[in-house]
Length: 226
Image (cartoon, rainbow, N blue to C red; front, side, top):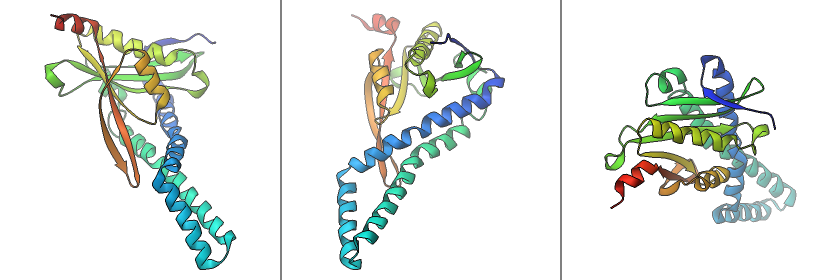
């Protein structure tokens, strides 16, 4: 395992950070595709379409070609939520990472560097309207390159955000992730994040549950104790 270090983002990191973020998001398309195929309505639709085309054309070959075309369309559709999210993010908070994350004391953006290359990222921004008057920090854009996973880099980046939150006097660290990001969910729960909410986001024919997690910092827990 090659050694790595976590440091603050620099403008020279920009292209690598954007590439890493985009690649990490598009990876979820295959998981989304499998999720779509497991939906009962998808199976019923594909089976019904196959039988209908066979009855109309009398050819299993034409029915098979049509179904394969539909599967290709569904695979393309599975990419849509992630490419849309990437496009939105590149035009909002990540359009100018230095301005968004490094212009004030309450926010930051870090990268993991290994052998001279950026292999991981994470950002943190204050929540504009924290609930219950608590000072909340939002963890954003946790990503690790595929070839550097399993080395504890993601966990180290999350710990960096948690320590930053403590140092800045935040009460909670919050984040959102989709139900399809299984490894991320397992990581957050193993580090003490608790699921605190859920809502659904729809793209065309796809509906995906978005989960909210919260990590209550020890100082906040102590202050709330009777």
